Length: 274
Picture 1 (cartoon, rainbow, N blue to C red):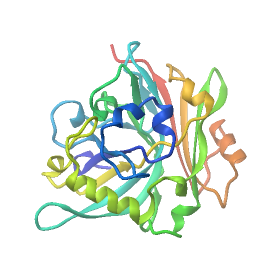
Picture 2 (picture 1 turned 45 degrees about the horizontal axis):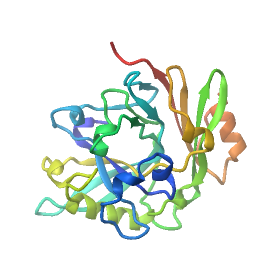
Picture 3 (picture 1 turned 90 degrees about the vertical axis):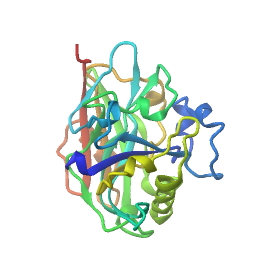
Picture 4 (picture 1 turned 180 degrees about the vertical axis):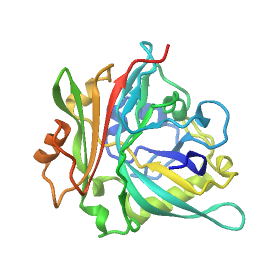
């Protein structure tokens, strides 16, 4: 992964109920979106940009807590690695997914922020991507990605808790080509509105790749009520449900070996830098 060739984007509101659980639904009251559609996209990394968005925040093993004044939650997601194809004018023509991975779009819940991007990147190790990226040949309906599910756990004081509901990828509000076409439209045309911001100017350097976290699933009761603390271990798993059961994935979160057909992101929460 070469950060200077990637832009990092996330999707807000692509799984029914998540925004309400995260306490963020009110942020989008004034945002225009079709019924049932995600609310928009947000940047979490922009190559060459000054400030926080210019810092590569992704780690495969660590979440660095931003400090006592902040409350943070794991956001269990699927990350898509997509080649960006531009037209002659510099607009995005299409996205070609080549891989998917377990992703933690870790987010600040308190204090609030005016823009989503301000909650998403507070420096190195504020995001997570599994070291194993599962190759995919596109995102067509009926394809290989349809077999996969997403689960999330937090280990605290030696006990493993289900943190996110074990969910099928086809449970996303927008998935398949519908998601990709929608993403292209938002990359080209999204305006600065409420918690969202225009992304098209951030593509002026024509990054070759995008890592897109496509939305967080719903929390369990434990996950909804529990913010991450130092020494917690957050585990996000994307797995082939035709090969593994939910019980087997729970065992992986508890330390059993990782198998083929799964992408596992395991991050320990460490103290803020002094």
